Image (tube, rainbow, N blue to C red; front, side, top):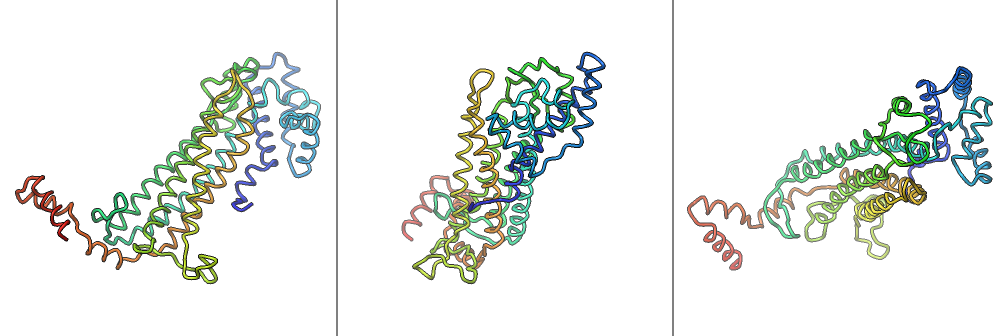
Length: 384
């Protein structure tokens, strides 16, 4: 895979998925035992034995193979996993998955997954923030541009600070996602008949998740749509940085350049070229991540208490968006760390440009009306 990511691939691997399912199911039964929902001592003692046996369960590559063999028969991944667990101990065979649904397991496990990968992406954001701070410490004068035209003076430090502010806002969106993940323990059709609120709260505490106010049989999918939005905000901030680089590095502008590494070829037929490959790649991949926001919102439209139309889409867009967001962050950080500002070209552009904004304000302060000052400077520009 061209844009592979070992950390994301590990987090979304079958083994990691089964480990999270195991953690969730164990937390469910432990919470049920703690809440005292079982009607008699025999049940309670059997549950305690199941919990004790469960603590010895581990998942390795052989476990994954065994579960997949069962899935060939069940045609249901969670059911195959539950069968595999039940074969471990007679008490577990009685109590594993008691009162809960596959959606309870998968949705809650996905909350654990998102918490893990958001932390990974957040570390990448921090590296980009540090790169922008370092680059922005060189505070040269330059001209800002609006509508692609030279407009009014600004500074390189302010340009970097503006991008830094947008990255910081995107990071806050990521933090909200990571701190607002929910447990789904609602049972068939969502009303939790087999356990009740006390059990749900105990399970949420064990897993470090928030209990939901209300569910159907699944968590409302807008919680995942917010994840897609947060990732889209991150890649949007990255793309704006890379667009800035591409515009300032154009021939005829030349305020930024990139270093051509030994052996690098910008074109297969024009040897002189140094193309902004990473910056352009960011723009292309960002379109894919943003498009997944639409998929995530389509997933919100489920029939009544649930259907499974969201599942296949989430299996695709979730790992893809996290994987591409990490690629985009790495590329953007590399662009920032390796771009070469040319303060002489920046200064020359300032000196050769007419700062009509400052002159307009000066003439108004000197006694002219706004219209008089504006027309005077506009005529000067035409005559020049």
